[in-house]
Image (tube, rainbow, N blue to C red; front, side):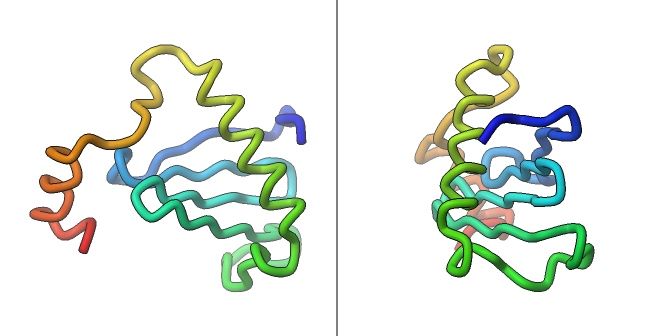
Length: 98
Protein backbone atom coordinates (compact mmCIF):
# COMPACT_ATOMS: atom_id res chain seq x y z
CA UNK A 1 0.00 0.00 0.00
CA UNK A 2 1.42 3.35 -1.03
CA UNK A 3 0.99 6.51 0.98
CA UNK A 4 -1.47 8.78 -0.74
CA UNK A 5 -1.42 12.55 -0.81
CA UNK A 6 -3.95 12.43 2.00
CA UNK A 7 -1.70 10.31 4.24
CA UNK A 8 -0.33 11.89 7.38
CA UNK A 9 1.65 10.57 10.29
CA UNK A 10 0.70 11.48 13.83
CA UNK A 11 1.75 10.55 17.30
CA UNK A 12 -0.55 10.72 20.28
CA UNK A 13 0.20 12.60 23.45
CA UNK A 14 2.67 9.91 24.45
CA UNK A 15 4.80 9.54 21.28
CA UNK A 16 6.93 6.69 22.60
CA UNK A 17 3.85 4.50 22.92
CA UNK A 18 1.59 4.98 19.93
CA UNK A 19 1.13 6.37 16.46
CA UNK A 20 -1.65 6.85 13.95
CA UNK A 21 -1.52 6.67 10.18
CA UNK A 22 -4.49 7.99 8.18
CA UNK A 23 -4.30 6.84 4.57
CA UNK A 24 -7.20 7.80 2.36
CA UNK A 25 -10.39 6.51 3.93
CA UNK A 26 -8.61 4.24 6.42
CA UNK A 27 -6.80 5.02 9.64
CA UNK A 28 -4.34 2.79 11.46
CA UNK A 29 -3.62 3.10 15.19
CA UNK A 30 -0.49 1.25 16.28
CA UNK A 31 0.74 0.80 19.84
CA UNK A 32 4.48 0.20 19.84
CA UNK A 33 4.52 -1.15 23.39
CA UNK A 34 1.85 -3.82 22.92
CA UNK A 35 2.24 -4.10 19.12
CA UNK A 36 -1.54 -3.88 18.90
CA UNK A 37 -3.18 -2.40 15.81
CA UNK A 38 -6.60 -0.97 15.11
CA UNK A 39 -7.91 -0.02 11.66
CA UNK A 40 -10.97 2.10 10.93
CA UNK A 41 -12.82 3.05 7.74
CA UNK A 42 -13.31 6.78 8.30
CA UNK A 43 -15.72 7.09 5.37
CA UNK A 44 -18.37 5.03 7.19
CA UNK A 45 -17.03 5.13 10.75
CA UNK A 46 -15.72 8.63 11.53
CA UNK A 47 -16.11 7.93 15.26
CA UNK A 48 -13.63 5.03 14.99
CA UNK A 49 -15.88 2.49 16.72
CA UNK A 50 -15.56 -0.58 14.44
CA UNK A 51 -12.06 -2.08 14.34
CA UNK A 52 -11.36 -3.80 10.99
CA UNK A 53 -8.16 -5.66 11.93
CA UNK A 54 -9.79 -9.12 12.11
CA UNK A 55 -12.07 -8.54 9.10
CA UNK A 56 -9.41 -6.96 6.85
CA UNK A 57 -6.00 -8.51 7.67
CA UNK A 58 -4.58 -7.67 4.22
CA UNK A 59 -5.51 -4.01 4.69
CA UNK A 60 -3.94 -4.02 8.15
CA UNK A 61 -0.71 -5.53 6.79
CA UNK A 62 -0.59 -2.95 4.01
CA UNK A 63 -1.08 -0.04 6.39
CA UNK A 64 1.57 -1.41 8.75
CA UNK A 65 3.99 -1.81 5.82
CA UNK A 66 3.30 1.77 4.76
CA UNK A 67 3.94 3.00 8.31
CA UNK A 68 7.18 0.99 8.46
CA UNK A 69 8.31 2.47 5.13
CA UNK A 70 7.55 5.95 6.41
CA UNK A 71 9.50 5.30 9.60
CA UNK A 72 12.46 4.07 7.56
CA UNK A 73 12.48 7.26 5.51
CA UNK A 74 11.63 9.69 8.34
CA UNK A 75 13.96 12.45 9.34
CA UNK A 76 16.12 11.36 12.24
CA UNK A 77 14.48 12.18 15.54
CA UNK A 78 10.91 12.06 14.26
CA UNK A 79 10.52 8.33 14.93
CA UNK A 80 12.50 7.00 17.84
CA UNK A 81 12.12 3.26 17.41
CA UNK A 82 11.20 0.93 20.24
CA UNK A 83 11.18 2.57 23.67
CA UNK A 84 13.98 1.71 26.07
CA UNK A 85 13.27 -0.04 29.39
CA UNK A 86 13.80 3.32 31.11
CA UNK A 87 11.22 4.99 28.85
CA UNK A 88 8.73 2.18 29.47
CA UNK A 89 9.19 2.58 33.23
CA UNK A 90 8.69 6.34 32.96
CA UNK A 91 5.53 5.78 30.90
CA UNK A 92 4.33 3.28 33.50
CA UNK A 93 4.91 5.79 36.31
CA UNK A 94 2.82 8.34 34.40
CA UNK A 95 -0.01 5.84 33.92
CA UNK A 96 0.38 5.35 30.15
CA UNK A 97 1.49 1.71 30.46
CA UNK A 98 0.25 -0.94 32.87
